Length: 30
Length: 443
Image (cartoon, rainbow over all chains, first blue to last red; front, top):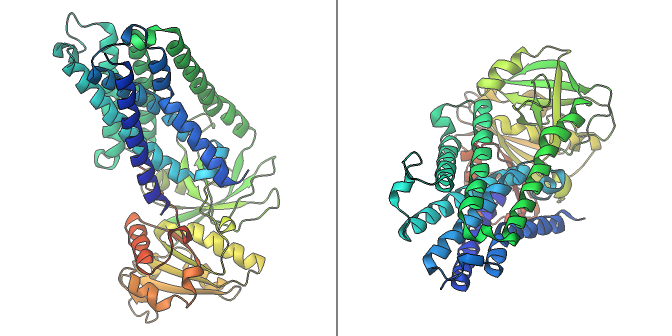
């Protein structure tokens, strides 16, 4: 069961990372 | 500190470390400010991918405080999946950067006119690609575990080092002091962790050797190694935990194998410990059978959170097959030695009675503790008491006691058995926090 949780956590991190990359690009782009 | 609090703190620190370069880049963009959106997005993917790769090693460096909070198998699974996330980010980074206008000819690191900063980046990406191939396809490539460990370590270190050079030479964000300072701090952190793992930890282990006392052949193509500590107090472990064993000349060599303890857990210092190893070819089939009494061996442990010590319940259901019976046998012995009267129901799965490791010992344990064993055999022959075939929700339902939803469940065995049991227990209404598993099929 802990292994299912790992899948979900990794997915959540991936979503978070993409969102932060968008924010970063929005902040520093021209 | 409670394991849950420790887990939250470590996880928070990890998240912070992998996204921190974005905060630094956004605050001090330097000459990189004002470039097109998708180029900046690609750069962000590259920075996060680098941070994830850099801290991949931290996840598997067996720091007790971290591994006891999550469990080593969970950390290894997380390491593997975050590696895939990093690889996808690198792919997105490369695609977006080339779409932003970099010449496609730079994809060839040997092309004349290519710049060195780009060459290092391409070579790093190739190292990561090779890393993915050997990690996800080890069995298909028929790479031995030892060869895989060596290749994996070399490719990972090469990829991180080349990525760092690529970042420092190429990225306009890295031209500024704050980003350089951050990358410098990351390098020092990683170097310190590496020195601890490669030098300090082995030195400490070198002064704590173990000696083979017995090497006993068991049913089910397994062997039990009984080890005694030489000149030190040994280790105290909880039933169900495992340790990394090495039979190499020194603990500095690579070639560590995760093996469950099969003896009774105890707190008295200086006692011998037994490890049971199933013959799976390479090391377990060639080196282990040849270990003679008197031979030195290295033990790094204990590790793992697959233990009833942390999951107290009114009763236990243990489901095991193959080598997975080893930690469950250790749990049963410990219950028996402590005179624990709580009921334990063991589903013991295998091909036939002769293939079951510890079948006789577990039969004998039924007289010393409140243990009921249900055999689930593919070929039960004349054994009329055994269930036939693979274990299913129906077989569980037939034997589980009325209060089964309050019991704690420990499952260890081949991946197929573990997947099937996790699904079956959900079907039976057992809540997820009562189900505990230990997986050793890492690569």
